[in-house]
Length: 392
Picture 1: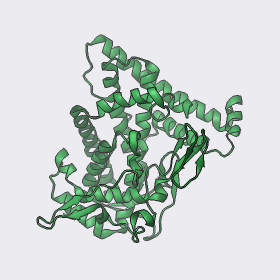
Picture 2 (picture 1 turned 120 degrees about the vertical axis):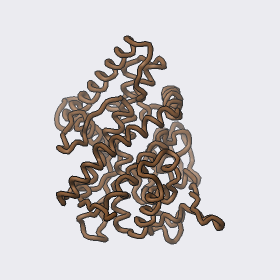
Picture 3 (picture 1 turned 45 degrees about the vertical axis):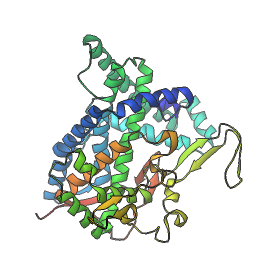
């Protein structure tokens, strides 16, 4: 992974990881970043996604909703991370160079990571041919583009005493992190984190609710009880929608497997000996379907398992699950920094889209799409849907 991620937060341990985590954690907890994220997501939703879906509905077009949601998430995360708008979700659905190179780099590094015989890609890398040549070209494209943006921001910062923008890159540079490689690595990691995870979660969510109309009607009632452009607190109070997203990610986690390496000899609770240097993978996809963890109805899509009804008021209260039972956002010291940001974005999209449209898969009802996994989950062949305007 190092050729692509360098010393980014996902690819390091020890002091370098600790330092990045502290810096990023501080920025993620600021009110100004939350406000910035709201503004970015709302602009992308109202100026790009909703108009695109309105045209698709009017023209009765079939669209690949997975591709649309990936484009939406890519625009958002680039604006949040870099303050740069790749304009990937335009009506023409352009092939933005940076986005295409990023997609290629993710796919090929994932294939490397999962290779049964790593020497095969190492030979290709040594002689620079085949997939490794493609990979090097994609990574060069991504890193050069990212470094160019870092240089431009740095120059802007040198000309002024502080930057007007509040994206993550500006924040890191403003507090004295001027090492070009360090900020490039950290920003590439954040794009990776924010690009595919929310779009994967939303793709499967929209498919699942199309299969469960009762759940969709409950979500719709909750959306209608909020204002047209719900503010942060209203989004936070969308309890049933929140539970439905959690339940959807239980079945289809955006990161279906995650791997650690043993830093010393160890013994697992069941007595399995783990030798130092062994890769150990845990499997949120399998855990989410385990009857032992979720009960006899573990195979049922049931948002209510995350809810508790108040006997007096009749309102739902959200019941948090133990993060080691539900490690969709990781657990322990590496728990996801962007968890709140992800839920904010997903709930705003769900509210914005479902208030006005019905998403109708073109596949036969009851036929489950094929779940595939690179670094993050995908729906094989895309998620082809028609969009219907709701009758108000």
